Image (cartoon, rainbow, N blue to C red):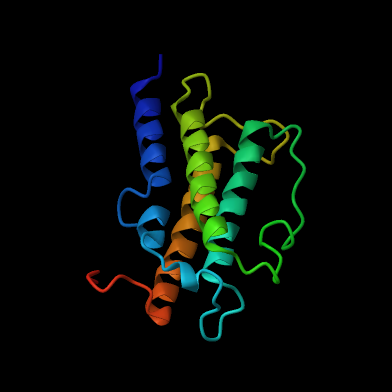
Length: 166
């Protein structure tokens, strides 16, 4: 059975992985995104909205692989394996698949955190002291940064629904 401190830590990690607190979730940011804008580059930006969301998904998937089996983990090549190809601008179907893949991987990471056999503070094998807690924080920080960026892209592109407040 978890000590109370571990339960509290797990609850906090589950919260940050869900976007609870001061951050917008990816689902909130991507809701009602117009299909015709998925593959459109905003002014002065080198990527499309879908490419940005796919980068978030790819990075989270990489960290999930690392947490699942750090001993066998082989790092991905930057930036090729963390961003879609520049010529792949995305489609509405790819956009939906990216959001679904992100949600599935986030839930897999949350399942690891909920697993009482996995100590969130134990050092992962073959790492320089990395823990499940650290990796959850990296995912949450990375997500918050880029989801905020996505929200600003929506403002610049005029793609928020008209009834959306600040």
